[in-house]
Structures are given as C-alpha cells and as structure tokens.
Length: 157
Image (cartoon, rainbow, N blue to C red; front, top):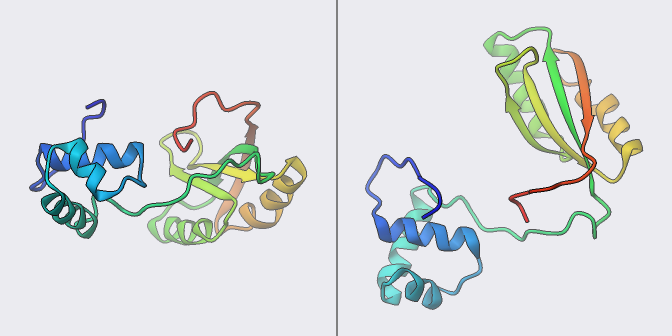
C-alpha cells in the first residue's frame, strides 16, 4: 500500500485494502471489490458497510472535468483575519463553507491565517467572488491572490 493510514480503531489489512481499492475506483461492484481484496462477497459487503458507518469512507462522488464545464480557473487566496480569537475563527469558518467556489480552505500557521483554493470560470468571475464573497466574510482584514497557470498534479482527477 502506497499510503500509511494512521487509524486508531479496529480495522485490519482487509479493511485497508477495501479503502485503497475504492480510492482508486469508487464504482467497483462489491463482487469485484471482494475479489481484489481476497474475500467472498458477503464479508466484503459487511466490512464496506461498517467502514461507511464508522466514518472511514465518507461518501462516493463523480469526479468531473472542470475544463469541460468551463470552470478551469484556479486561484489560491491567502486570507488574513483582523481577529483570531476562537469566536472569530468560528464565524469565518461558517461563512467560508457557504461559498461554493471555495473548493478547499485550510487554516495555516504563517503570516496569514487561511489558504483558500477557489475555482471559477475566469479571472473576472474570481474578482467578483473575491470582492463580494470572500472579502465580506467575518473578520477578513486582507487577502492576497495567486493564480494557477497549470495544474501539474491534482489528486481529484
């Protein structure tokens, strides 16, 4: 297995193989998944349901080509807050979760507080999202933008 998963509870190598196989192809039928991990169908299905119920597998989704949907403009936005007390952080976090163009938001230990990955159709639309949505979030003091020219590696695809 390529990744080392730090898991605290009662999962074993079969569970890890199920997770890895589904990370590669989330549409695997249970019968094929069982063959890949070396189990019969029923025990594999029971394990899969448990992994979902226990929160190891959070869901399944379609991975789309953003360029074909006209959404291939990516900007990374640094956000500095005027207030970093817990209440202010919570207010910012709640607000940023509501902005559909923000694909990722990470709290950063740096000279700024958050790093956002923002996907829009073009720079004009990004400017609107930045001005009307991101800059309007609670406690935002300043932002700085870096526009991606090309995605060399994107694990979503």
